[in-house]
Length: 465
Image 1 (tube, one colour):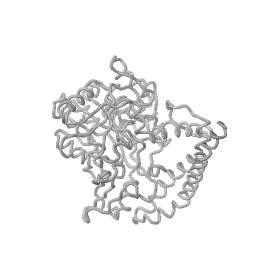
Image 2 (cartoon, rainbow, N blue to C red):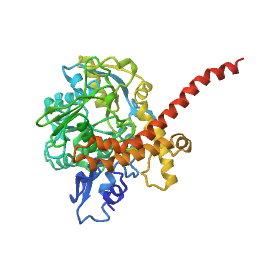
Image 3 (tube, rainbow, N blue to C red):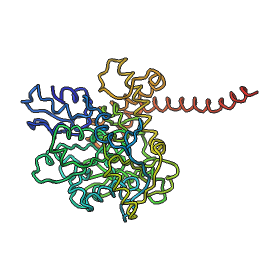
Image 4 (cartoon, one colour):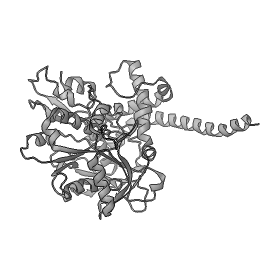
């Protein structure tokens, strides 16, 4: 059996490319699917007994789940603590890069940019693998191998776009030079890298640090196309998108998406809060695999970076980062940066970190428990997760789950019918029935919460009479 039969055919591929990167016969290749997602395609000649591709897939669980991988990486040190939600940790920090330009250009407070640049600058690694602008047709973003601090800075910022790692994994394994690498990736990709390192001594020797980012979900290529058309940039002209441009004086959460065309330049900036449809909340264009991800804080990574989505940081438009350090190397580098003033960091509690990501925790715990219960009721195949199906969560969320699942599937199936003519208006009209249903549902739920908030004090008054 191969990853194509076991994972892709069940619509559970997240497109990380680890399978194609480690296939011993080179039979897998990452291609765009009709749904706008990167998936492996298979040539003839795959031996049934191999299954190397399955051993690295983040959504084909074996004995190596996140718990066992993280424990083997970090669980043996006496300085390391464990929390059920964030995983292993040495320290939790809040701060930003003090190096000129990094905070403004980077995501959040620019700490990931500073950290990766410092690894190179201090000679801790020889190369950094990060996502940057793509150089091949049809790949707006791709993995870049940075050899200099300047190249790391070129990869600053967020890329809400499918990217696969097969090429860089092959390059690392096939390069005879004894180079040391750091890789930054989403939690699912970090997990697949750890699984690849478990079966490849070369990868294990050369990749000395894995960094991750907190991730709520991954949208496919169609989402970027939608944003471009919303910004009045035609798909034929589209060159790239700056997904998170910061605006002085604005709440850092209200970043702007800015699409740029090859001939007509920048389109109309789209502040996040002004996008006409709830792309992320309602799971437009989202990979189905993301419905089953239970890894919030990149539990297998040495260090994790995230936004500080907390009210005390909402007035600082340049952004603030939260960081979880798990390995000694990561904690030491952060401490040295704070001591020299290159970054401004202070310790925060685990509860502060969790509070900053309540929305992601809700999706990957409560909604996932409800979704698993729904799947088992309906006989839908799903990967094994560390979350237990919950009838209680299902009863509370089943309408929302049904509507977002319909939006997720319908948006991906409808978009190809409208994209060729840049017909974003036609697409939005086609989605109106589902939008109306989920809007009506949310209004009813909000009304229930409002009534409950009014009745609470009345009940307490009656109780204490």
